[in-house]
View 1 (tube, rainbow, N blue to C red):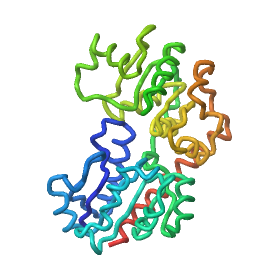
View 2: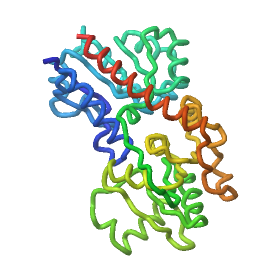
View 3: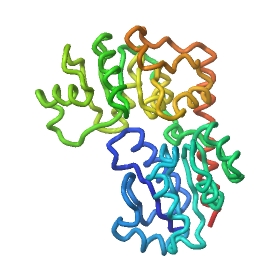
Length: 325
């Protein structure tokens, strides 16, 4: 069996998109006879993860889960790229998967060109990689979309409002939830049960979003990715500031409005899926916006084709990774 190590493992982020990506990435590798002998968690220094460097030296393959890390020459991105030239990695193929690639320094391109496989999760990142001379780059939609989901055919009702990485955007979204009498469901969760009880529950919503006036709306934290998907699959609309919140909307075929990120990832995903670009809105416009409009038939057709493409290309990606060793 092929031995592999995984860097930037997002399974411990208490974020439903990250949990889903990590699960599907690991299962896709395992199904092809690749044994993940060690992982380094996201936002940690892999060189200080107990036993990781030893397992790196014993591995046949190195896999880096790129996600949203490789942009703007970030320190976190540099730390991940450092594995390519680490003595314990010498001679081993490196696969960077599910990655963004935007506004990075030229010396990063020199490193990534030496990776055996690079999989971009959106068309803009793929174009940036090709322009940087990364000829082995392929395009595979975000891995969160790679597993088929049964969309309920029954009646769907209610508006769900999500969160954002940025505090200022969360404040706008929270006030929108108040004005629309929506249910506030962040894409993150907390493991402690204390946050599910009043008054800690109410206080958490106010502090997290920076909103200390008005009524706290209906507020729930889904305990896991299945529960989060269930909530969205039974709603009639979703307004979110999270990339993976948008991905879940696509999975559930749930009409949405999305606030753009510090990168182009939200806008590009909407374009790649063939959806109306007007679904991406500036955060300042939320206060005057109605609920998300239903998908028209063209959008729905394009969305379903994009999800099918994601599934097919993910299967091909895992086969390519297995073929590296």
